[in-house]
Image 1 (spheres, rainbow, N blue to C red):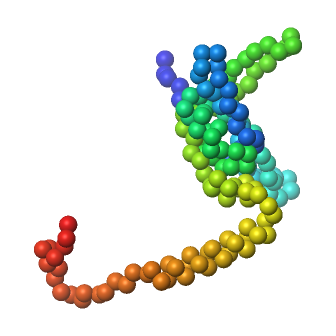
Image 2: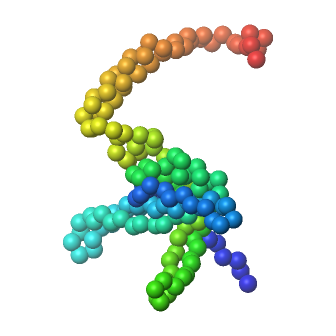
Image 3: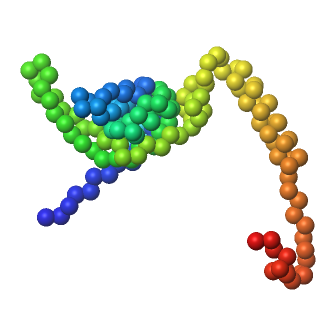
Length: 164
């Protein structure tokens, strides 16, 4: 019988702060969910439609601890893992869900929410103006530190002159 292939890679923004818990035997488990935005063209109207899908993610052990420590609501993340279904009974009803068990989580954007989340503290206006000032200072410094490369023409290079 042929083996199956169960691998998922998702990139989206966290819909809530990660929730870190421990199992009775002390194993860490972190739960969070991603919002995945997509757009498609409506066949009847020809207009572009925006849609969002929500996917629950589970990260175990040290990976889950790092996710809980460094990620927060609104932060973008790239998650690689596998799909897993589970079922349980709640108030007499059978329930089931499919979730992603993360093998790897890459933190995208900046901790202050630069990758899609809200700026840390205060209103947007001061953050925007300071960003413009910082950009101007950085570009001026880059011009000051610019390296000048001299053209040596067609002279042959002596390998003994290279210091490594």
